[in-house]
Picture 1 (cartoon, helix red, strand yellow):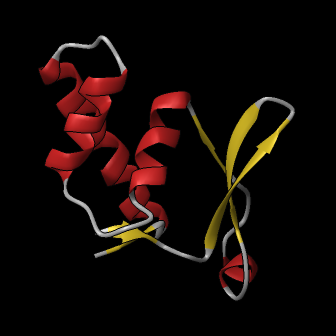
Picture 2 (cartoon, helix red, strand yellow):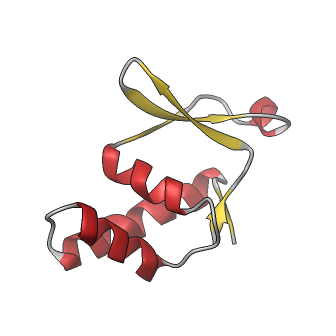
Length: 88
């Protein structure tokens, strides 16, 4: 899986936002706010990656229990899929 290239990450006043561009911007109303951990994962999704690779990166970057990180990653990916932010 990888991120949909019709979303760009923008930093606005200290907030990380996914902003739709191109044709997608006509059908998608709004932006998606990301926390710091989500930004790490979004950046990894530039290239085709796996949930396991995301987990390894999160565990290397943050002091969080593996089970909690797995659950957060699964939720993040689920939300991205619902919004059309991922390409499978």
